[in-house]
Length: 349
Image (cartoon, rainbow, N blue to C red; front, side, top):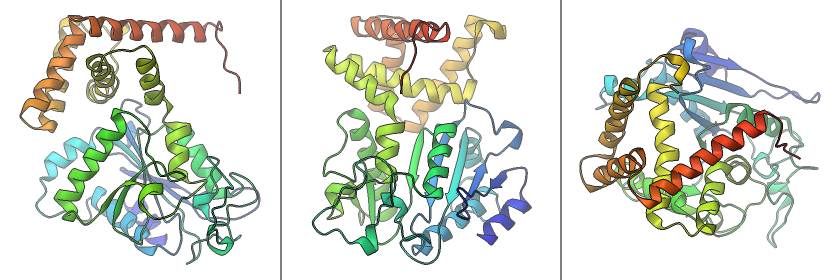
């Protein structure tokens, strides 16, 4: 922890940090924010990653990994065989928060609670092999300061990607932890596909890939990852459900998904251009096309990149029935947003 704080002190233009405590129980949680230009730390167009290390304090290697990553981001260390300029071009579009919350050298915190069982999704459920010395979920969901801090951080930061780093086996897991299935839909298929590529290229196919609950050999209830998936990542879940209930063909689904994810990526490069910005339509189109080309370059040359480009243009020129439906969805979203701002729609908790 002290090494991380010292690293942040040496690189104030790229790294910032804070520590937190709650309800009189002192806990040292380091939250380090990385941004290549500190002046852009509040830029909401950037792609946001929230990465957690040391949730189980005895998994010391995860905290060492956090320090290693920060050393690379601050350019005190360098990855071999990596084009630093190309890496920096990618990092220019990212905002990363790394959380190091290890407490003692045990699985549980100082109050005997497993922090990765203290979240609200399926909290407190006990399997036949439940061991209170290992999996104590606490007196209630979010009873522990670290869980409270993490939940508040996730709600305010609104990450696009959540990564929870543990140690003990070679695996790349997707939700769920509390049941032996994964979320339905294309996003899960895509996520698994990405992890399989990572496994092949960087881990020589040694890692297990799949849901935590279906792969690790036991079900885990009240975990951080299931909370982030079910409670935080609701936009794409809702979009998928609406599309399937509307019986939209798969092409329309791909256009909608690409529009949602692609728009985030393109906005992270060109920003959210509005009529008040004084940018002509032709210049806006030029910038967005340039960003789209960059996104397709990341996919590599071939049919996949060509399909992404074709689907994007399908939407832009409104040239198919599926594209027209998706554009109607977008208009409906704008109308709902205005109605909410004017107070015609209210949220109840």
